[in-house]
Length: 441
Image (cartoon, one colour):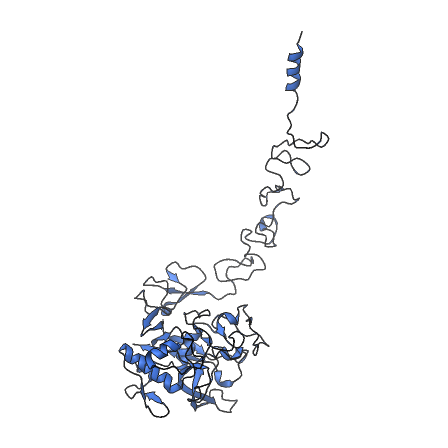
């Protein structure tokens, strides 16, 4: 005869164990696969890999996360993978899909079956000295990565890893950037928004020499160190750019820096009632002088553009209707802000600002656009009234200023814009400064 105790053990061994979930007996449902979820939440209670929140395995025909769908668009770019009959040729990279733009990267970005079709190849340069910058005369075009070359072709001294375009040295207390010579298109297209004069005609220019250019516009403190006085109107701001000096004062200052650093002076100046200077008789061209001087227009624009061809060195152009906008936060056609690179009428607070407070151009030069105009070494070229001959120019009497100023409208701080005050007009106008250069043999 089986005892009551033994019978109790037998009965208990036949009962399936359940977990107390806080539900009533009528709500109590088994979790057969032990994944912590019960039907109807668990869409497959026989598979512990299928439950709400599970990692979805693409293209396997199984709904692992119980959302009613198998994963067919793994990179969530809006296109199903070609593995399930979709159009996406790389469902692990959202930047590759049928709506993507084809770029030069040896990849079929738009999934049309053709690699790098309809795009310009990249130019790769030899980097002999291993400084990450290539020799500009060694360019080879390819959309495939060339491991022994670099995309940066700004090193005309490829036998010295310490010298390339943009590298900075201190000379006479002035930070100077090394600039490799080269060929560029000077001026602006007739369709560039903000272009109001015909004197920005486009033409190719080759600078056959290398040169140094000051990283910043000359500050008031630097001018006082060499000259002993300050002609600026916005006094009490040592790190603001020099302004309100005449052309003669700018050239005389360049001579003072040359004397202070042991270089020959570029100018011969009188010290009469109105200071005037001219290129010294020892030099046939201004490029021949080894001392500090004003830049030529070609040097200024070449360095300001820094390899770009747009209205501004950040790749942007003014949108139609914004040429005279002084409200600030001006968005350019590439989405960049003019306020990030320029001091102009929209963001300057109606005065000059500290140098170096805006983003530099690609070659490391600050305040190329706005803050103060900058004297150049050339007199203005005035176009003749002959629409049939746009290259017919005559020499004018006034020096050229570039850059635009703190009170200029957006169109006046474009790289190609030119100004032409009388040589003595700058004093008291609060808008003309100077950025020195020096030729390199």
